[in-house]
Structures are given as structure tokens and as C-alpha cells.
Image (cartoon, rainbow, N blue to C red; front, side, top):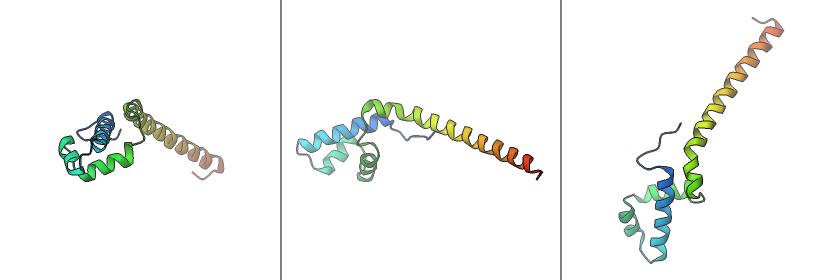
Length: 93
């Protein structure tokens, strides 16, 4: 599973929502970064990755990452097994 920093995906979405509220209230970007305790680059990265997510989708993200890793591992094992069977059937062992 991918390791996250000091924030969880749920916190990313929550802070992005807060940033949007600050923007709507007329705060400038420097004030938003200070209020949220993050840098400009982090906010931009979160916006590009998590802006379209809801809180429930962000909460499910770590589980989906784990499941994806498990499925990739299973696929790799299946491909190795298939290749071994192919070599045996051709007599190239």
C-alpha cells in the first residue's frame, strides 16, 4: 500500500474544501496556505489529485490501493504460471 504523509486522503479533501471556502470569502492564496498550514505546491498537488473526490471516495482510497496491489501480485503469479506451462508444453525446459 502506498504510504501517505502526515495527512490522510480524507484530510486532503477536507482541507481542499476549506481552501475553497476561504477563496469564496475573499482570502488571498498566501492567507489560505497559512491557515491550512501547507505550501503552495502541496495545495496544487492535492487539487490536481483529490479535487474531484468526495470525502467518502477519499476514505475508500487506501483500501482500493491495497486491493489494487493484491490484484497486481495475483496477476503476476498467474502470468508466471502460464509461462511455465507454455515452456513445459513446448518441451523447452
